[in-house]
View 1 (cartoon, rainbow, N blue to C red):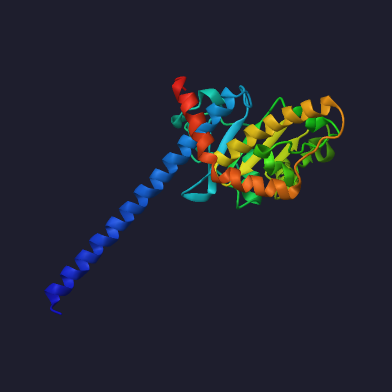
View 2 (view 1 turned 120 degrees about the vertical axis):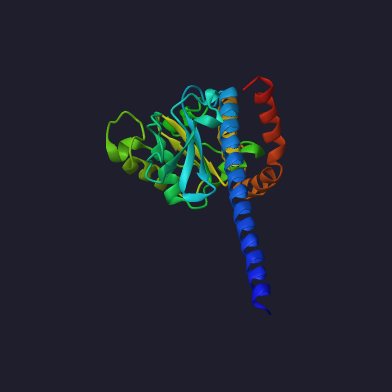
Length: 265
């Protein structure tokens, strides 16, 4: 091979490497944009259904950096736009706050991401249907197939056990670590007198779980009120039903997305 041919070959290789790098950056940006859109959609969907009100938040692990996560600035979920999404490290520090205020309870998210490498999204709600199950002796258990993920168990975390009488907020990493420990390998953890945190392998799954945790809680309360023994889903039924639900998740997600879009949200 002549010197000129060798130089031409090296040049072509250099161009290919550069193109691959550009394509990789473009793909990463596309993934980031898709996740940001899901956070916005999920926030507004849960607000529309009353699972979130002026409080609560949705986050996602950063696709480009698993040691960072994305979450909105301190803002009511129904008002969140893509421009409100900020990047945080796993200590809960904003990468570039730009003067924006942040959620006090971001440590719910940061500590769960630290403890659970499999978790790609976290939703924290003050779900009205769930609250009674955080303060009573009745365990939250699945009464229908859409909430099948609850069959694996729903631990209840009580901030008072380790931190005494507080303002009930997960305001630092130490408190967040105990919440993440209580969650363990489950999909949902209840927070006494506060709400819950739902997790999943994507924003869509975490939002699905947050919504159907609230729906199930309301249905379970109705079933209990009827009297007699409640015939809950078994662990095996829950696992099988949950697997099917995850396969068809886009059906309900696209419906929800259309609903909030149609309302100008």
